Length: 87
Image 1 (cartoon, rainbow, N blue to C red):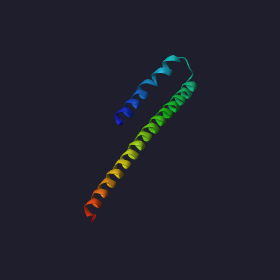
Image 2 (image 1 turned 90 degrees about the horizontal axis):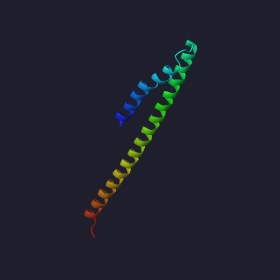
Image 3 (image 1 turned 60 degrees about the vertical axis):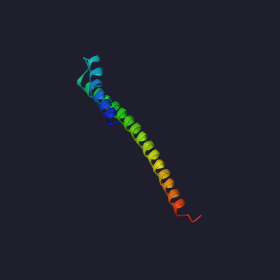
Image 4 (image 1 turned 120 degrees about the vertical axis):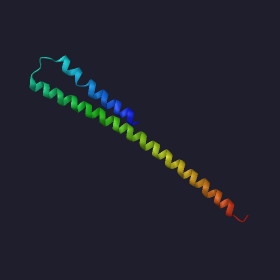
C-alpha cells in the first residue's frame, strides 16, 4: 500500500513540472509563477484523492478485521459455554 503511494508521489514529482514548463517556453515570470501555483494545486488535489482512497481501504480492512475478531470471540465463548454447561 505504501509503495503505491510512494510511486504516485514520485510520478507526480517527475511528470508535473516537466509537462507545462516545456510547452510554454516564452511566458513571463509572473505567468510562470501562476502556472507553478496551479500545478502545485493540482498535485495537492491528486495527493488528497490518493490519501482519501488509502484511508477508505484501511477503514474497510479494519472493519473486516474487527468483525472477524468478534466472530472468533463469539465462537470461543460458545465453546466455553458448551464445556461448562451441565446438560
